[in-house]
Image 1 (cartoon, one colour):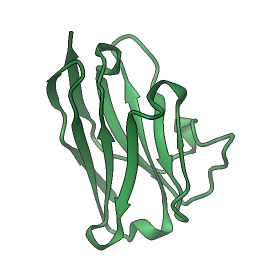
Image 2 (cartoon, rainbow, N blue to C red):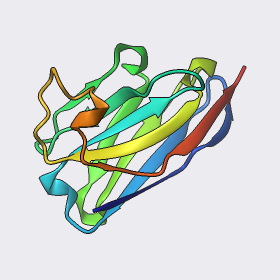
Image 3 (cartoon, helix red, strand yellow):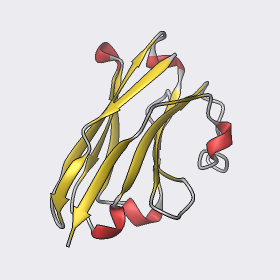
Image 4 (cartoon, rainbow, N blue to C red):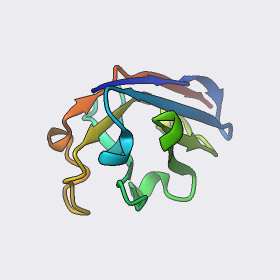
Length: 125
C-alpha cells in the first residue's frame, strides 16, 4: 500500500487549502485513514481521522475548521482546511491502518501501518 499526499502550499491566515491523499495497492474502504501534522521542533500529532464506516474524529484545535472525507471511487482521502491560522503551519502526513484504532488510540502514530511522504502547509500572518 502506498500513500501520496499533495495540496500543501503557502496561504494567508484565514485562507483555505484542501489536501489529498491518493492510495494505491488496496482499497481505502478497508482502512482507517488519518491526517497527522508535525510542526518544526514538535512531535507529530493527529489532526483528523476517518474510520471505514465514515465516523470521524478531530483534535480540538482543528474542530469546526477542518473536515476529513474520502472518495472510495478515487481511492482518495481529503482534508479540507478552512480558517487557517499560523499555528497550523506544519508538514501534513496521511496515514492508514487496518481500521483497528479505537477512539482512544487513533492519535498514536505507531498504530498506523502506512504513511505518505508529507506535504508542507505554511500559513502566514
